[in-house]
Length: 192
Image (cartoon, rainbow, N blue to C red; front, side, top):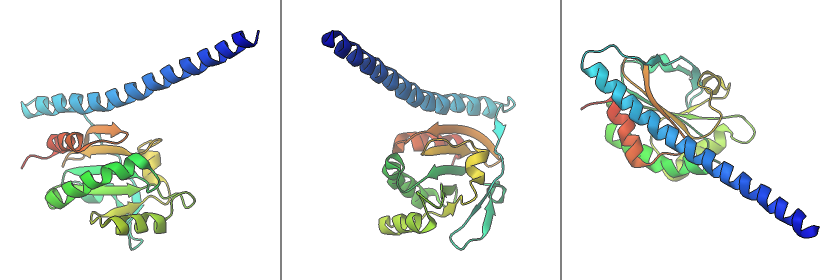
């Protein structure tokens, strides 16, 4: 009887692991698919067809000096909108790629690195300390009111949106992205 019980427990654990692996794979596949699909939409619009894209919704966050900043302040320039936290491993892993691209394209593409500042797990000080320790120079904004997170329905970190200069969301990626995926997203919103 004990062997049957142990077998059933192991079977349930195995099914849970397989289901979890499938879900993670599906989410990663969807993020890449969204970037690929957005690339096709951008190509269609370049050939004269109307864009079938959602406009980027406005939100308010705060800069390092505590000044309110809105997304609409940056429309007119392509935008890479990244939601992150210093305690988030995948966020930390992708930050060097974002920093490198910011140093390369910071004059042409606006990088909005929005920290999910909840005041408990993530504070302005912990986020600012992390950025300073790493030597990152991109602008960091603090979502202390959770306005941006609510508007963009950010439930997992990191999450990145690629917004064209006209203010339309061209692509998004949920979860950590690598340098190649970041470049692909930038290519969809910016052409030198």
